[in-house]
Image (cartoon, rainbow over all chains, first blue to last red; front, side):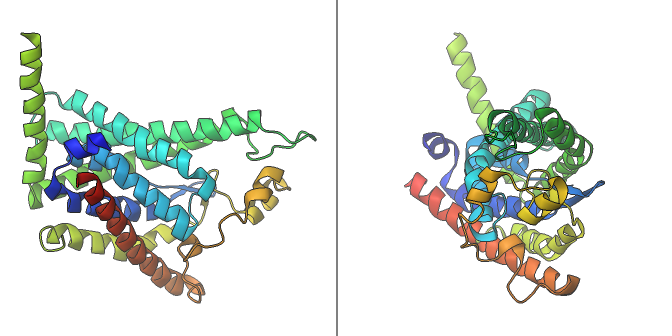
Length: 213
Length: 104
């Protein structure tokens, strides 16, 4: 909370609200997976790039909680796990990949857009991996007295293989595309939003210099 | 809030209107199977899941379906868009309130 207070400017509050609503809507676009499954993109890394990872965590978590409470999607008992995987792991991992690849490039440069897209790809897949591991561990940890699984019916290997195939091959590239298109749209409509990132990093760098002295 | 970021809202409304595309993927996400799907797939319902299945019967639009609007694709699509609108208003509203409280 403290970090959000520090990193999110007051005038960006409505933007976070729109971003959370955007993430909610993006998650409604189920992608068909051959073999009768489905997956979806999230948009969490786009939010992290625009508003910082702390604010993105809040926005995506609100979207996930409303999904569970109002639309029975994801599940009440899974809210915690979902918020951790999709609401925390994803924006933070994606954001740091983005910063790392972007380096000193400008907020709109092709390099920054590619960095954000790769951040989206990595972030979504890490979230999927966490989810798969949580699924699989339930199979190994919780079994009824008669040996039947209490909650999850496939072993870790199966869960990881299934989740990662669909997210590495399909949902990941779609997330990268959504992130890049989102950056492009913001660049055209509200370029000042990406400039914020510049001032933030400039602030951090100058602080770094002071510390090094 | 609406005027300042009008173009973002327009984009969001376009996405909401396109959202029924998400209905074309009929499969359930891995690990999010319903009880009847589990029964079909593995032949039994894990005891722990059965216990908690009815924990939350209060969903307004379960599975993004508006009661009375579930016959055929067109009705489902309209229900899906209504769900998107309600969801967007709730998510944006709650985030706004929350962020405002944090910033105060």
